[in-house]
Image 1 (cartoon, rainbow, N blue to C red):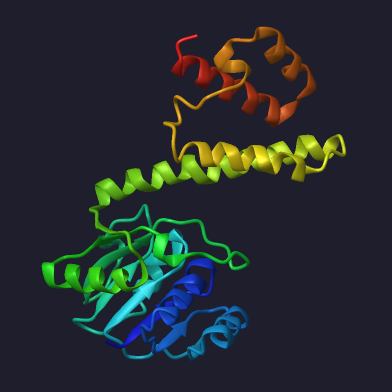
Image 2 (cartoon, rainbow, N blue to C red):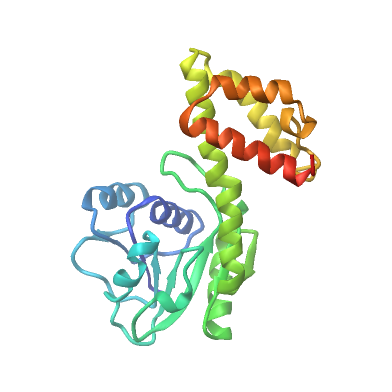
Length: 249
């Protein structure tokens, strides 16, 4: 099967690596950013182009959500299979005379961070059973966790991921601002962060909650509020209110 990956960002980079590491041939990586495409090509050995889109049986679109529809219009081949990798878009966002599908990897991707692709869940949606099996078999060569999921379910998967990953990482960034303001090395907090993440492998997150909010320690909460300002203060108040409401304090 001739396969082309479209995109030059984090997802395209990791999809190209995952395919090649698992012996899945790629015909081309296509996109607008020639500099980034060249880097991916040099690392994976896959030919790239910014001008000519190769003929293929399967096109996997790895671009940001706002660009998926316009990029999908570039594919004019009839009866090929086209998949996007978005967690929030329906497969019908794809516009063209081809079979439409979703090939969603549930992970946070950065080019600078190595990943164990076998642990990444893939969620598959297609228009027919034959394509469902095709993408399921393809994803199973990469990952040990492959599931079917329609758009309605995938929206909630993506929403959960935003809470569990994007928001948490933003809190790390805010926490580092506080430690940096007092010249406290953020590395000191990494064992705490590691233990917090490791704990929820064994304990339900709600049961694992600790801290002044769940204890309703008003003195500490007020002290912390005096130390903060602007956005961090609002985040602190909002998070504590959410914790107290969850535990009805």
